[in-house]
Length: 581
Image 1 (cartoon, one colour):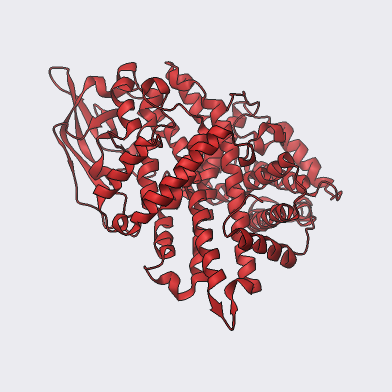
Image 2 (image 1 turned 180 degrees about the vertical axis):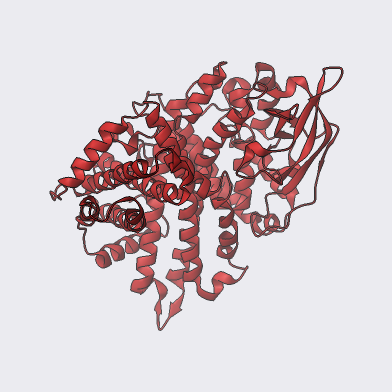
């Protein structure tokens, strides 16, 4: 697609509405986007899903062969610049590939890990020599990559890692000592992005090759799911790493680690969204075929309600993913050719809040959809012969990967307030407007969707302000409050993405309108759940704002939910899969 500079800054959705013209959704995919989507879908359908049993039995030779084939098809090269053997595609294409391989379960984990957090550190922070040496091989699949951050005593608190790096007497190599755990792709990786503290204190990034003296692997972990993705410890015992393999600046490894993880979170959201689409297809196929009490499961009202809500949730997840991919493309376009790491880091951090929302919403979408799919399968859903059983096990890790969902929720509102304190977002004006909105809340009837979004946004800002007044600088220690505030912010982002998509398409489709209503109704329900807990802590009993918040959120009427959800389900039955209506 042609590059258009977005006028949207990170976190701005929390303070003001944006124009639908500043958002991107699947209906606007270019021919190039559709081509890579078709290539990825065919690869997953014909090559990966047909090897499900071999992958699940941990035949890693099969996984490696598939990765090599993906490399031949260009599916590992989308985010690598053309000058280094890649395709140099936009972040929308990155999301498209992630969505498609997300349907494949554990193979998708290996694939996405390689193309994202194992390759992008070199793409954005590597020297010219490092890029020329490693990126062509990573883009083609000649080399497979891994990312080594977690340690036995350093999970969410990555900076507390104990791995050290000491320069040898000759000044030619760093000697790395420590253990990294739960490393994805470990057994078949050729390169490892490793974090260690130089002289025990300067957190630094290194590119480590599998054959460097002193690197060894622990045994394969026995996991609940994602069995086709190798997971082992990486053990470093005086591992000799040439000084030219320092990635970025000494002491600045945390910048690489955390900014690259933003893209990892976005990528995980895409994979989970694609996974949820695949699960929905299995559920629909089953309920259309399975009979109980003389009729198919699909004919029952409860089944239709489940299918409709699964569909609406996936639609919302898809909407926020594509919206974010466009934001990331605008922020990162051309940065893989910028030498100033500060500019690179700023671009990669710009939409950290949105990437956190992608990760949380996407992983919880997949978890919710696959749980309902197992329920719809009944006893069959508990039998390994049926793919949905494996999908259920595979889905669980996503709420832990790339920073737990709790960490991401804590990050979101905390980062929002930091951006506001820096003057990057107009907090004071937004809060003032939020109080005014809630004080004069009404439903006009012709802008119901937009007014729902404004009610949620105003609720979030008012509650953040009450929290700031009550706790001041101690707010960062009030994790229960921060997590609930962020949950509101995440549902706001999803709901607004759906409304913007509806505005942009300007479709008169009744079923599409019903999907939007179901998303908004579910979003309001989740927001109210958080409001009920927060208002008791934050708003004084005599304060009239308590009633105003509830009135604003409950003052929006939608169509008959039973009829609406039945119509959505019937449309999904007709198509046999998730559709964009």
